[in-house]
Structures are given as C-alpha cells and as structure tokens.
Image 1 (tube, rainbow, N blue to C red):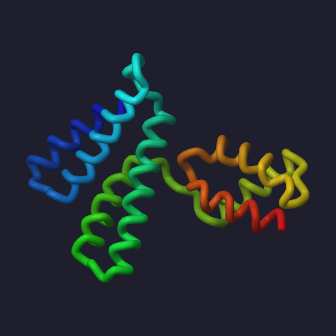
Image 2 (image 1 turned 180 degrees about the vertical axis):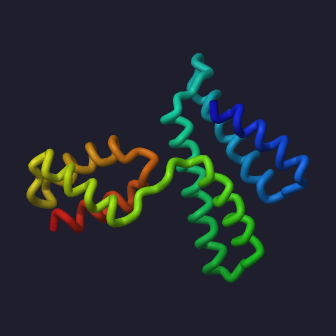
Length: 148
C-alpha cells in the first residue's frame, strides 16, 4: 500500500522538479524494496513493517543531521533535514510528551509496576502499544522517570 503511494509521489515530485522531495521518496522506496527482499519467500510486508522501515530511516536522518551540525556542515545538515521531513509525512503522528506521560501512567497502573525493577514489564507493553507513535528512546526515558 505505502509502496504505491510512494510511487505516485515520486512521479509528482519528478514533474514538480522537487529534488529534495525526490531524494526522500527514493530513500523510502529503496528501504521498502530492501525490506521485501529480506523477508525471503514472502514479498508482502505488513503496515507495521512499513512503519518500522520509516522509523529506521527517520532515526538515521536525525543522527546524521546531528553529526553534520556538530561538525559545522550546514550543507549536509540541510539535506538530511529535507529528507527527514519527507519521511515524517508518511509516519503516524507522534505523541507529545504530555500524551506520552499519560499513556505510560495508564500502562504502569495496568501492569502494577512500582519500581525501576518493573521497567521491563512496562517497556514491553508500551513498545507494543506505542509502535510508530513514539520512539523507543523517549518511551524509555518517560518510563524510567515515572518509575523512579
């Protein structure tokens, strides 16, 4: 499903001569094709797989942008940020900090967690329920903060 949307977007970006958008879309298409071939026999990937692929691409772009910014390479930083913006268009809306805290408090109440020792139990549930809506690092920080 996402692959068809990306192909249509690539055509539109080519017609609009939008180089930055085209780079981001081609990166998504390449990652999806790679994910389809990694699976082996089954060439169909699920929506969850697509989200994971997009999250991985977004994380790579963020890390690269941070490195380029620290090395004072504004030209390369801009390229990464442009691609990141395109990739984020296809990701589910990320939860804000307040929404995330409320959601995790609910999970803590459900699991009966009371200390940092129960972090694994909370993280397992949180990662499952928040897949695509928040990144693992942020979830981990909030869980640790609430259980401390």
